[in-house]
Image (cartoon, rainbow, N blue to C red; front, side):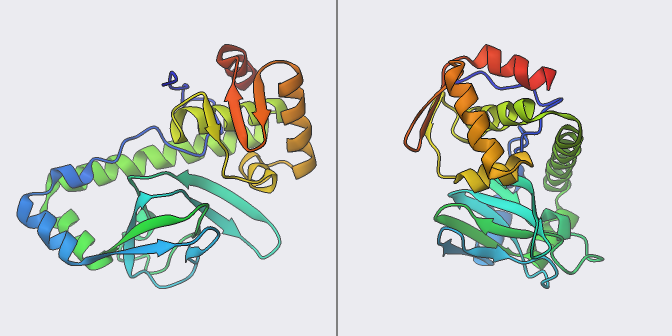
Length: 233
């Protein structure tokens, strides 16, 4: 397992906060939540929710990988990647926001647990420890997104590409070698660069001995140098 990268100064799309809110529920509350939930299987590239749609559920990624994004029909901005055991749709938890504030799509085949939003809201209002953990998740997500936007604005291509590789290795797959389920276009969206620039950056990192690419497999060879590139931007 790799050492976790520092969160500050990273355009990583994943917060390091671990979702533990369901651990705060009593057995009866957990039964109540499960009785008002259903697990839906989504295929790769299938839309999970669409910005502007009425909120009916808070979602939990049981397995797979999803992305939250904004899209105007031409351009797309990835807000964050949601790995397994993380919540999706918390921005619409407030009763004042009855529509989804972003769209979400399955990067790969995924199992998504849909929880009735009114049940989730009731548990937040009646269980203080559960509510506290949900607030912690929202806070961690906000900090992560703020840092990501700052870095996308101020970091050069090398720094952003290093961020994404470290993010995938440390926070998604949690190992130095992994099969990448994302296309070069996906990586371009994540890093705020063109597909051509991503391909050029990956070749440069390979030539410099930072990573090894074999088909869809990527291996981080020099974590320390990648980290320095990430920090220097």
